[in-house]
Length: 109
Image 1: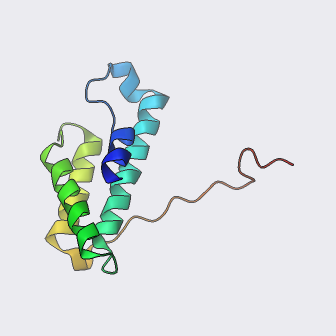
Image 2: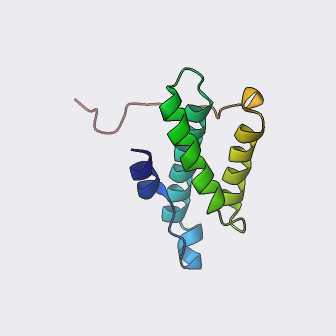
């Protein structure tokens, strides 16, 4: 499940410059960042099963190993992973993204 979420959200490594800064690239980067933050939250959850935490930590290590530190997003995510790994007790999970006000799209009667 984790691999499927990463594969669906991970921004393409090779993108034209316009796509990196375009709306599509920004949305994909935001989704990827939230996916990694969800993994960090899961890895930090002391109530999660040991096997779940082990798998999540292994995937976080893989993300860290393959990070392109020239990418601001990947450098930041690498920093967040290092924060968790260096002191799990002090790690602060990211706040959930609040839904915008109003009815969800498609909820019209």
